[in-house]
Image (cartoon, rainbow, N blue to C red; front, side):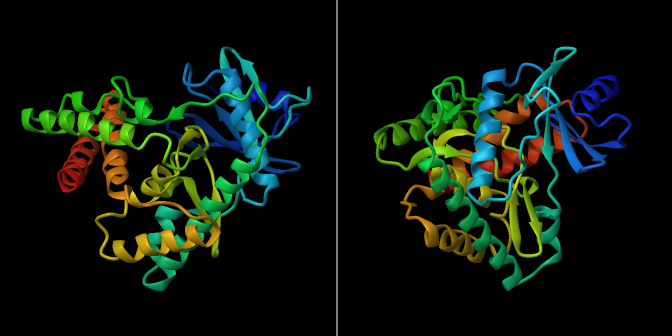
Length: 309
């Protein structure tokens, strides 16, 4: 891995710059402190995204940044390209954003400070959707679709949650029933839900907080989807918090300051978001902490599914 990083530093004219691994989840992300500032160097997971999808992601991020939202911006290499392949690994470099992740910040704040952050997040989320809707995308733009098939079809993008090997027989039947009923429900609303480009993974770890300013990172799963799914994703991990009703109200208030949205299916999308983690973790159960994480995901999804059904 370090050999690829060294070759990338050469490509981006940062030979000898110190670097450190700061994230090793879906992609390996290194912080590079070069002469012109700090940057995020990403080594992409093999086979997850095509070159066309990554170039589309980078173009979209540039557009969102130009619209006034603070997101990482792609940095061209010496050859003027924003993406290169080294030893079979897709590599890009982004500007580095300062601040702390929202999950860390929320743990240190209380009361109104927490609701203000959620209101600000709602505003930035809505502004990102407005910018994306106003953008004339290039013909070669391609990203995944978090539509009814991508979330609840026979082969969801994040895995067949009803086939998680740690499910009890009862839970497997419950989740399979939910998949069928929820899919039918979404299909019945086809064409009537707000749909467009979404980040799709605005969990607390992908939201940076700098004072009261909100910054958005990790567009790896961004694509076409329901805007209400975006809101559900930001809320779902806080559903068990004591101040969750206030956070939910604040996020929606911030969002609707910028644009309107129909939220009648929000509880359904909270349940959908919860089961996606059960599917996503199937391939990750054997990772460190994967079994414990699986149990948490299943318990949270069970509660939300039962509540919605």
